[in-house]
Length: 506
Image 1 (cartoon, one colour):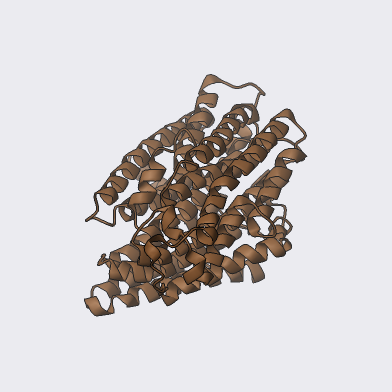
Image 2 (image 1 turned 120 degrees about the vertical axis):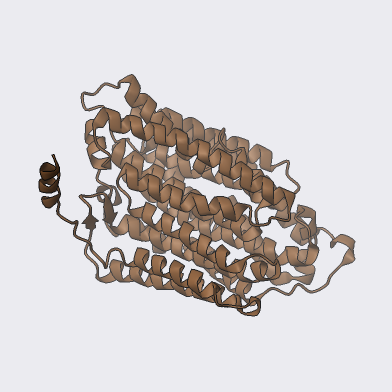
């Protein structure tokens, strides 16, 4: 028996690694080790170095993404097609790296003055970003699950980073318990997929599931369980209960990170599964995702209307925006609409990331003076901080979908995708989304009214001193929000770089 094992081992061939394709992951892994090692030798007065180094690590990883997009081959595949670097993956890797960089800019002053453990904070943040970067290239159930846990486990700890705050402790516990529950459901669905197909490779699952044109009960249950698991991750209704409390209890930069990067990673995994693993299971996932999208945008909006706290309002707004991102996936399997659906999801994620990060950056700057998270604390902001007032107006208007800002183009793409399908599913959700767009404008306008028309609370017009790092974050996010609205072809060409649906194996 031992001889047989040795003979089998002798036939094993090491996989060929493409180090250029893995450059962003390698830089991030080396950067995590460097930040962790450097933190051991720095005194409290020089911990800011870890923040600067973390930013350079993310920019260094972004260089790898740029070189791959400029001089790289069309598609690089490793491990038998289980890890793919194509234009779809590169766009999303750049999104995650830039989001992480902006979050570090927002964090540096907040973490330093909040007396948090800085080195560990940036190590966990970089680790979570590494999981997101891996998620963009994963084309196998195992690699998707590993990437998801790699990005989620550090996020659980970051959500509870404010240990002296009871709300922070509650945020961490809720996020952890519900996140583990969601992972268990998703993993059970993945195990069922492996059981009925005999493989974990997404392309093989896509060709095996419902191969005879009929659905077995196990196949249906597997698809539903996987979608439910990711519905928790993207805080889709009715699996959204954790989001408002976690967003309010976590440090504000981490709230921004969870609402943008973590949510985007969940959407990336769900999108990949829909296009690659479930192309023949349209009748299973389409009505389910349709219900999730409608419930998320409607209930998220209605609950956001009642909020008086800006962070909780943005939390429910995030749930509603998630419904709009899910909307194109309801028609992903319909011929003639799949390409526009995938393009709409990618564009929406890019625009939403810039806009929402900018809104949270303004919240960080204003709360340094007001020490309040209430919407009323923004009263008269334009009268004593005109730049912040204008910036918050830009971000709120973009989230509402008002042209010529980036948000309108993102929503336009989502509507175009469902209308291109030319089906009852598409027309019905387009009508519901149009009504919800009007409802959402009400609470975004409420914030703008406070900024421009309401008096300053207590008449305190003390100048707001915005840290230079937060100023840089505001400049980046505002520029992206405006440019992508005025020149939509810059983001629209993402769908023209290659046939993204073909890149995903369709």
